[in-house]
Amino acid sequence: MQTVQPGDRVQVHYVKRFQDGSATSSRDRAPLELTVGVDHPRLPGLGLALVGLAPGASTKVSVPVDKGYGPADPSRIRRCARSRFPKDQSLAVGQWVRLVDRQGRPHAVRVVKVHAETVVVDTNRRGAGQSVELEVKLIGILPVGRNPQGP
Image 1 (cartoon, rainbow, N blue to C red):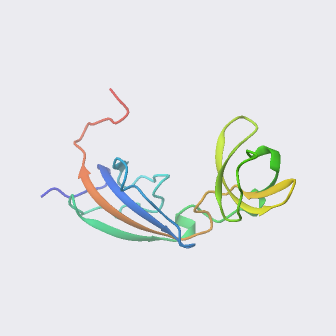
Image 2: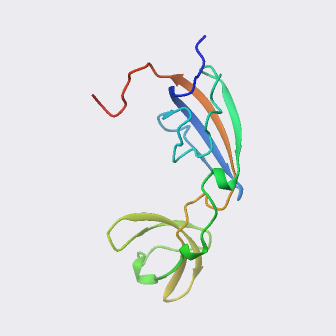
């Protein structure tokens, strides 16, 4: 039976559990494709943990803050005018919402405080400052030479 080697392209499903108790999963989507041993933005810290696994096998990896999304940056706490959010949008502390920056690009931000005229948001990445537990299931090993980006 074929097992994963460093540099193989593979398909996986994953569950990420953050230190704050939140979790995300790929189970309801198409499998994620990645190269074993190459950092991937969705699964930082996975590294070579899949080496030796056969399709159908799973592994769990504990990823410390410095190998995951890095430490939270206090300078990324921002005060925004309440008018930058839709008038009918309720905002609650801890809630993740989309905020469009001045260049028109949407970003996920976490609400820290809500005032009548301003909203304090944390613009750090969702996993910043937290350790992460990854549960990864190997769906398959892709054939050599397959280019998911096209010809």
